[in-house]
Amino acid sequence: MLEAIVVAWLLLFFGDFLSTFVYHIPEHVFGSLHLRTHHSWKKDFRHYAILTLNLQVLLDGILGALPYLIMAVMLWSFSPIGVISGLLLGQFHVWWRHVSILGWQTPNIVNIVCQFLLITTPERHWLHHHKTNLGFGDIFTFFEQPAQVWLRWLRLLRVRLRYINFGF
Image (tube, rainbow, N blue to C red):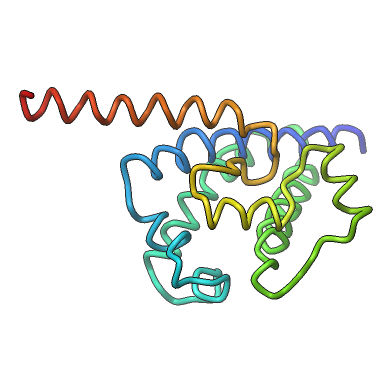
């Protein structure tokens, strides 16, 4: 039982880490797919939820989920039940963190528990939808500060690459 809990936590931790630092932040700096499908001011949860048949939305979802699936493959031999539990918890969290559009307000006791466990709430994730430079970390809030550093570094790299390419 303990092994399944540890594997589920590892899957969520490293999946969130990789999704944030390998896909999400680089996509904010160098790409536009995620910003168009997930952050447009004209969108709400129903527009970019998995229920849509928009291939760009599905691609963004798959790319965001890929690190979790890679972790699932790596951890499967340790605890299949832990992997399945971690993937289910991760998917439930995706749905939960997008309920703000439906008028949901997290109960105070749940907010306190989430703050203690450093888990992203729907309100915190909604902040990221409105201010795309804040609120990084799909599941865990403790990735926020390193994400800010990585975001600034990648933006400097983008400027440097443009400088090199255009000879300014």
